[in-house]
Length: 110
Length: 112
Image 1: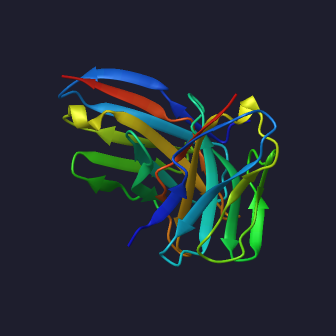
Image 2: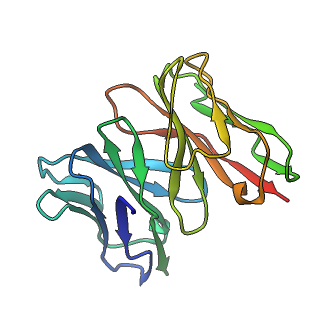
């Protein structure tokens, strides 16, 4: 009964490629959807998305939430080896919990 | 400004032993949570707190206790450690009205 499902679970691409990571969820009544990047230690916050559908961008990373499809995508263009990490999607629920998916492990080959 | 401090960083326990994982934050954040991370499982919520004196269960609370007597501290207690509790534990905090958690650096716990 996973509430947050990420795909793919693992991805290997070459430097310079563009990748799209997916996050789908079952909960409809939530505050926001969050994306985190985890390298060797603790996750670091990337984006917060709401049902407004507004795209968020930060450099080569961008993300948007599709309210109809109950999903979100995280795009990374012109990937670099430093983008290698686990990318975590999470839902911030109405009862103040943050529930994470299992993550996508991204590996960028030089 | 230390952020979220977790101690210890590494711990090995024998089955049946008890211990407390410490978590302290100096940002005056109301919300604090404990997660465990296992390979291929992402982060799973153990317990969380929305303020001093208030705690609630997350997705995987069994075998763990918490208390929140002050805003700064949110210790996680393992009363009788089991090998299934071998994991990396993260404490996180955030301010009310914000969405981005600040995570501690984690505690790697091994139960043998």
